[in-house]
Image 1 (tube, rainbow, N blue to C red):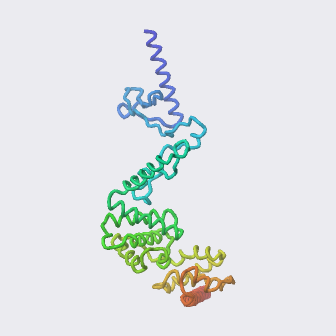
Image 2: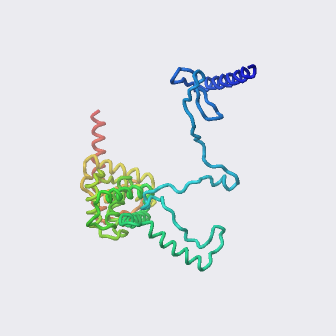
Image 3: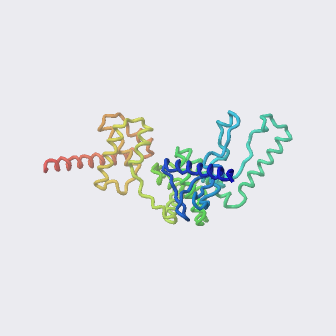
Length: 334
């Protein structure tokens, strides 16, 4: 009897200690049944009411890392999962692939018969990764998107967005009657504009496998059917890339932005090629800041004609002059 009382006393003492710890940490929880204090049993991972004994929660989840390091190498390579899923692959990266190194797990070179066997297995593995027409379509289109994005220097997020747009078009059955290359080019063009890193249609012409007319028509079709709601390209979005390629100063870029802001206020940018406006703004800003830059250099970088630059920069300077006159008149009126 005394032993039972002593055990009960120890249990009550431990419960009171846990209750005190909960109070000190500010994590006091009441029982939903009787309103008593809920404590945590660290040994079993349960949260139990001290008054009525109801188990509030059991089988607690361990939110710590799932790995354990037994060797120094495992401490550096703690991940036990594969690569993250990506829309850039037709199977989203969930399948496995056989490597192309003709070596075994120990690093020894395979024999000729083993190399021949692995070569056949790679071929069949590649075939089984795209078993139906949809996977084969995606595989070809996503490869085109990745190739063109690399040629244009577009970042990873633009490639992912282009892949999602193409998948949407494929799911909504928009591809019949149109080439895979044309729709892939249109998807990448739309993704670049959505991400704020636009490329002109002319820049896609040297790298696309279809003519400009086809992928321009495919883009209009995609934007209409998928309701992409892409706003007209802002000429100022082309400035950082052009200025960087021409190795010009930040002051010139700032002046070019002021020129574009002035022409936007007058509505003079409506209906004009944004790359031509950006090129004209850079040349006009060079005249205002004293930076030596020729129309030919700007034209080659922006892929527009020198005639376009001459027309645009004069309009930009007139808009800036009119804006300055308005500002002076307002100050004089005040």
